[in-house]
Image (cartoon, rainbow, N blue to C red):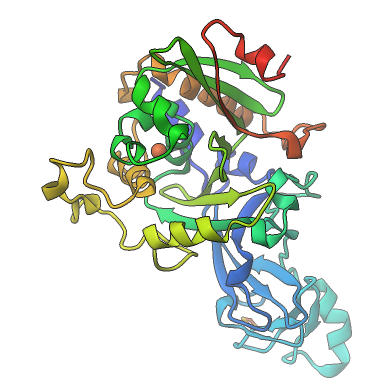
Length: 398
Ligand code: FES
Ligand SMILES: [Fe+2]
C-alpha cells in the first residue's frame, strides 16, 4: 500500500512531473525501425505526454523532432519528407535529418543564412538497434547506449512488437515483473506450453528472493516441485522500465514505455542469441494479427468487457484470446491509474514493493543509468535446481 502522494509521484509523467523527468534520463523505444521508410510518412511518437515525429530520410538516417514546428506550431506529421529533411507545409521551413534548419523561405533571402541557425528546432538523439529506434529525450547529452544483448543481434534473430494500453506505465511494469500471476491468470495457456512452463502449474505460490543490484532488482521466484527439485525463475529488472522475463527460447524482454499518464506502449522484444527467429515471429503474429506497430487491436474496454468471451469460461480460465491480452486487460481493468492506497498486498508482492521503493528514490533524486552496467550480460534465467541448492551460487551471482 502506498500513500496517495507517493502513488502520484510514481505514476505521473506529464508536464514536468518528477517521474517523467527522471524517466527521460534513460533511453526509450520510440518506434519499430520498419515503421519508418526512406522518404516515407513521418510517424508520431508520444512519450511522457509529449509528441514527437520520427522519420527516415531518403538516405536512410532517422530523425526525431518535437512534433510542433518551431515556427508557429504546425504538426510536422504533415511535413514533406524529401532531400534528407522534413519541410513544414505551412511556410516551408526545412529541417534536415541531423536537426539543422536549412531553409526558411518566408525570410528575406539576404537574412536566411543568419536566421536559420537560430531556429530552436528540438531534435533528439536516436539509435537503431534490436529492430527498433531508440531515443534519448532528456536534457543534456545522453547516457551510454544500453547495448543489451538483443541490440547486438542481426535483424533475423530479433523482432519487436508493441501494443498500446489504456493505463499507466507502472501498471505495465508491475504486471510484467509479477511472476506469481503466471500460475493463475495464464493457467489455460500454461497448460498448452512446454516443460518450461510446468513449474507454474506445480506451485502457484512462489517464494520470492530479491537482491538489489546497482542497476535495479534481481528477483528469483522459487517454485517447489513434488520431486523435491526447485524451479528458479530469475527476473531481471533494470530501472526504470527494462524487464527481462525468464523465458529461454526465445528470450523475451518487456519494456513498458510511458506514453502519458494514462497510456503505455508495451514493447515485446523476442530474440534468439544463436539463430533465426522467423518461425516464432510467424507464430506470434498468428496469435496477435494486425499492425505490428500496435497489435492490441481490437482494444479491450469496459464496454466490450475487455474482449472476454464468457462462453469459453468452462474450458478456459479467462476467456481471453491470448496470453498477452490477459496481461493487458487486467492492467486496464484497474483503471487508468490504479489507486495504490487501496491495495491489500500479500507475500507474493514482495518484488513489487522493492521496485516501488527504488522508483520512489529515483523520482526524488533523478539520475540516469549508473555507470558500469554490463548490459549484454543482463539475462533472465529459468532453471531447475536441487531443493536445497543456493540459487545465487548455482547461477553464478556470487
Ligand atoms: S509553422 Fe512550420 S513553417 Fe511555419
Ligand atoms: Fe502475464
